[in-house]
Image 1 (tube, rainbow over the protein chains, first blue to last red):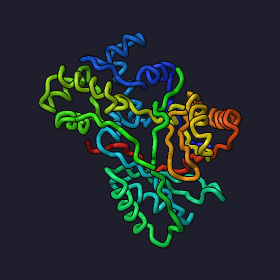
Image 2 (cartoon, rainbow over the protein chains, first blue to last red; image 1 turned 135 degrees about the horizontal axis):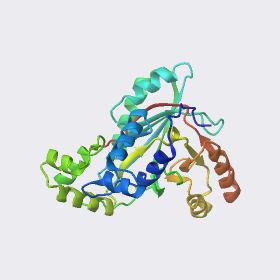
Image 3 (cartoon, rainbow over the protein chains, first blue to last red; image 1 turned 45 degrees about the horizontal axis):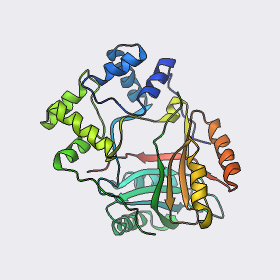
Image 4 (cartoon, each protein chain N blue to C red; image 1 turned 90 degrees about the vertical axis):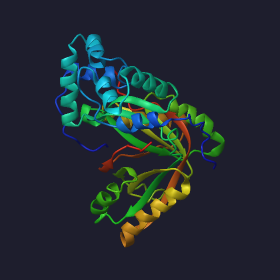
Length: 166
Length: 157
């Protein structure tokens, strides 16, 4: 099951605000006022609630998500690693701190199909560059790594973003 | 497998500056676009027009708050399937038909289909996995995150 997290208190209005903004912010001069108008609250209240959700981590950030293909990152390699369980947290933090790693997670193995317990996503301009960066990770991990692989994406089958129902 | 064929729209230097400036910290003020435009030396109207165009042409997949849905009581989990080549299109259509499937990528491995499930409650993950297995007749391997070391989807344009 997903990791347990402490849930910040979100009231019904916060949840309506999430549903109203998860597809994006309106491109109008006063976007928070427009959202407030939909929810029956003032723009200032929208701002205050978004600020609180940012502070509690319900919102990671507010900004753009570039299509990585469109901005030139055409090679998307999911590097996966079989790391000694005794050292994975220490090494996961090191790999996650590398500038070219965009996501880094510890996940369960699925033996025998899947021996890997560390996932590090590497986006680059070409596969050669992904491979070079993966080699850097391998050097960093040294003997604690018993094997690794790179899974390149060869097609985007669906991309709608993460949504919750209203 | 070949790289996916993508027709990359032409981005000019101003588009790239907008993308790089807006990867986080969009202002929480009454007129946020005006503030960003001023910082970039653009007019508010030009910033809005370029954002609209980049969203329309899918240079940007989203613009707004990025929610961590676990913190809002929801759940998301990476999952993979080993799909026989001959059945790939059928299974992709069946999997994609689930609204809980947020992203789905084909990858070059025996586990060749990787998708993210997003549900309003943690319990929804197990029931969706079971429903996908029933619909496709194939096992689904969930890979829930046990620990997050870093997530910072910021790419320099």
